[in-house]
Amino acid sequence: MIRRHVVVSGTVQGVFFRDSCRQLAVEHAVAGWVANRPDGTVEAVFEGAPERVGPLLDWVREGPPLASVDTVTVQEEEPQGLTGFEVR
Image (cartoon, rainbow, N blue to C red):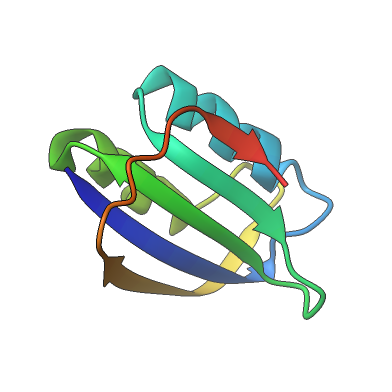
């Protein structure tokens, strides 16, 4: 089990980033959350098996079709045993 805390900058709000992320997380059985931040970035936490979290980390570097991702920061954190995935 791993946990990754991600912040994505660029044109990532108002382009279905959060909902697309939620759908992908559910497909891959990854727990966590995704939220818009006041500074225009999107923040997310992914928890799950490495082979399940990996595709989400790859996806956030591109985002949905209308997004334009500039930078992605990823921090390793200790898993907290989250269940489900929510849009905040």
